Each structure stands twice: as structure tokens, then as C-alpha cells.
Image 1 (tube, rainbow, N blue to C red):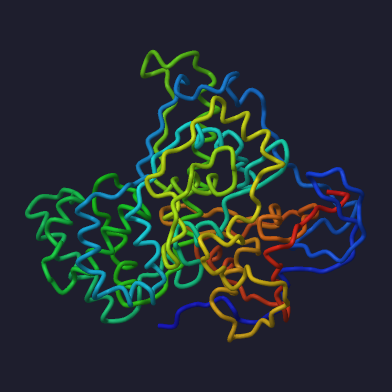
Image 2 (spheres, rainbow, N blue to C red; image 1 turned 180 degrees about the vertical axis):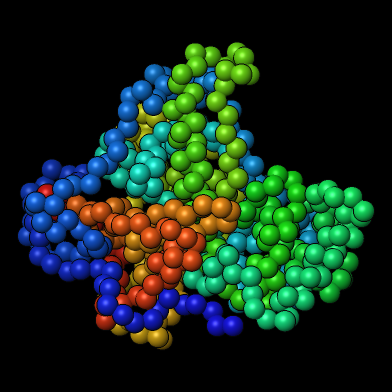
Length: 463
């Protein structure tokens, strides 16, 4: 069983370098001819049609921004804050299993599950209004942005490399561990054909010392905090992933989490648009409803990192704390009109918040200095991750049909890269297998460009 790394060599380049007339999008400076760097693919010819941005239709928005008064009911079942018993279970297992969590790339994600994020409903709704399902990006009057693989890695602690979430394992040891979980599931259930509550599962295993307590713990974490498709119940479909992680194998949770967030932002956007046909929320049958199962709190954390006018005072964090610890239990900043704040945020938007030094924490390898890095089989995981941040791909989630397109070449300034007019990217989503092969296709081109964390990216004149 060999973990996929994504750094095999072939013929596709990620970044191209060329001279272009560049201009700052938020200043009145003159165009300047300089060497610039762009994410592929860009518009290659003036005769090539510019991809449609799918502009927002006024009819899809409510006249005034008062989401609490709209005929709209949103259930955030994937927005999970920790219970004391969960933190206690982590404290029991951490002394023994932290090295395995670190090896599997889930230590920060598990520790992040101990943090609480109070939901700012108006902010989430305001962002969803700007969501463009055709490009999986936010379209603001001042520019285009999105929540990216970078965000789910830095804020969520979810690896972007490793086995796909659809991988069930191929060893006898894994099959035996999965069978034990299924057997214990039957023992808890008894003679009835019912679902097992998460509370039952935890009460049965916590501190029990059973030989599969660790796998049971990871199954609970995965169901509660990563992919909650059955509200309040343990999900047997996560047993294979839990058994993989329990053996220190890395699973690419990042693209799967991001796929679920993209899916839910689209569902929320469509439901907001649908709610405009009702005049009030007085009657329950005149209300648009939606249930969101993804960890949507990451969308709010993404916004807090980037919109100063909406940013609470962050916590001071220690060197080895997860980035999300900055926002643990902070009180959100309430503004009168979130829509107006978002529409006017172009001059202050934080394009690269993770490139800044916070509380003297060392920046990651791909934020430090400008350089061209040779791509070979010895490329470190951090730089492989950075290359995956930059490359258009398909994201495979859990559940039927959860395949979403990832288009970072539309939002290159988020990575310290110059922005040109983005070109169309064909889909590779006929099956989860085809989509996964597209995501983990070889990273090539001889060298990978890493921008300095101090670099101020710009846009081409034609953009």
C-alpha cells in the first residue's frame, strides 16, 4: 500500500513566466512592463472568447439585506462545536496516539475540533449571495476570490495529498479492523435495525481500552467534524478511512472537504434565490429550506482572515497551535449591512493572510522567499501541497456525485501570483476515479515558482 504523493513527472507546467504590461487593480498607477508570473491556463489569443463570469442577477437577491427576516431557514448540521466529553476523549488518547495523528496529517485537524466558532449568520449569507456556482468563486464588485485548498489545509488542518477518501484499503489488517468496527456497531445496536447515536458510540468506547478504541474515536471525529451526512448518528461508511488514519496513512481530506463546501455554497446560493419568491416567513410552507452538512465554519474563518472590517480581535496563539486557534470562542463583529461591507472591501481585502508572521510563528516553506524549485520525486510535501493549491483540478468528495471543479487560476492573487484573463478548463468528472486521477495527475514542468511573501501581485492590462 503506497501513499500517493502527486509529485511524479510528466509534461504539464503550473506557472508560466513572461513580460506583460501590469497594473495594480486597487491603485491609480500607470501600467508597467515587467516580468510576471501567471497560473495556467490563461487566455492565449485575443480571438479566444472570454469565459462568462455568470454575473449575479438582481432577481436572485433580496432588496434589503436582512437575512433574519427572509423566508429562509438554514440548518448548519456540519457546523460542529466541541462538547466536554469530546475534549476529554482527545486528552485520553493524545499521549499515546499523537505521533500517529501527526504521521497521518490529522493532528491539527483533531486539535482544531476542540475550538468553538460562534456562527455569524449574516456573514455566511452575505458570502453565499456572492457565490458563483459556475466557477466556484465569490464574485465581488472589486474582484473574484474563493476558499481554496490552501484554506482547508491552513485553517482546517486537512491534508491535500494522500489516498482518496473513496479508498477502502487492500490489506488483511485493514479489513479485520473494519470488521471489528462493524461487529461492535452491531453489539451496540442489538437486535434492532436502527442507527447508532454519536453519543451512544462515544459512551461505549470512551476510555474503554478496547483494541479498536482508536479507530472508533477517529470514526466519531470523522462523522462529527469532517463529513456529517447523517445528523447525530455514527456513519459506517467512514470506517475504512478511520482504519487507514489509525495506521498513520495520509488521506487527502482537504479536496473532499472543499468539494463539500463548494456543494453547500451552491445549495445555499440557490436556496437564497428561491426564497425571493416568498414575501414573508410567516407560514412554514412559504419558506425556502436547506440543510448544509459540510464544515461551513471554515468559510467564516476564511472571511475573518481576509476582511478587516469583519474581523474580531484574534487570540494570541503559541508557536505550535493550529491557525484556527486565533478564532477560538471570539465574539464576532456585528455590522449593520454585511452586503455593503463586502461590496466595498476591495482596498482592504487580505489576499495573502497566511504569508504574514503571526505571533512570531514561522511561515511555511512556500511563503518564505521567491525561488524556482526543481520538481522531482524528492519534492517535500509542503511544496507538493503548494503546487496542488495552484493547479485547476477536480475535487472528489464523499457521497454520490460530489465532484466539484477547482479553478485557482481565476484567483491567483491569493497565492502571490499575477492575474491574467483565465481561460476555460474542461471537466474531468465522469466518475470519481477519473476525477481523482485528474486531481493527482503528475506535477511537472521542471521547476515550480514560489513567490516571496512580500510580493505585491498585479493584473494584466487586458484583465
